[in-house]
Length: 251
Image (cartoon, rainbow, N blue to C red; front, side):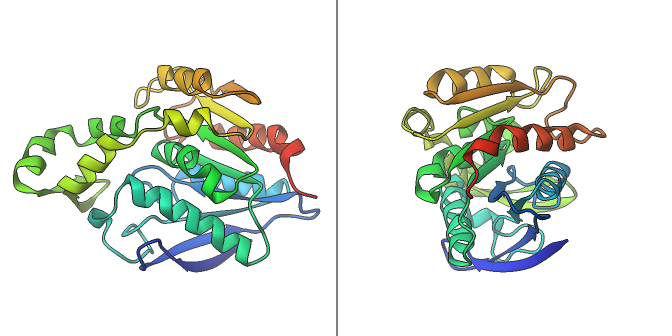
């Protein structure tokens, strides 16, 4: 069972989310942050959150600014906003009486989770297929970068949608730095990555793991693609997260 919710983003527009309600007994609560343009209903987000909910961990997943059911303009956002909105989502859960024990991020959402963890007051953090440098996402729109920097913006066709890619977005991604946030995380961290990930290479996971301090764990998602779309991949990841997080969940 899922409950539809809406909450204000860090800049005002309302973001649309789903809370995958946990089965009894409730073990804890968590927040899932999706990738660059993926949305709350992408396979990784939906299947991992449903698996965690079936294991007693309620999960909020939501669409970032201007995507799917959320208000606003995606092109007006940035990595900085993605991090700030992660904090707002955690605050929304806390205000409803279910503060997060677990912050899970996939792809660029994993980078945002690492950057937001301390401000979101997460008990434990999980990164899945995350880049060590947010600017790694530029590979997805590299054909447009020169035009965007020269003209200020350009239309980006992705997943059957036309998004506006702006200079401010590209520059913000290039400025973003995760290493200090990872070094000072002071929270249990689980790094998950496929050794055959052709979108974000496994070397990113190695550097995240080396940069982090204990307690830290690494799980290889062998056989998985970056988006965890093949049957059973996301569900398996959810089961692993559930088992790992057990000692970090609230009463």
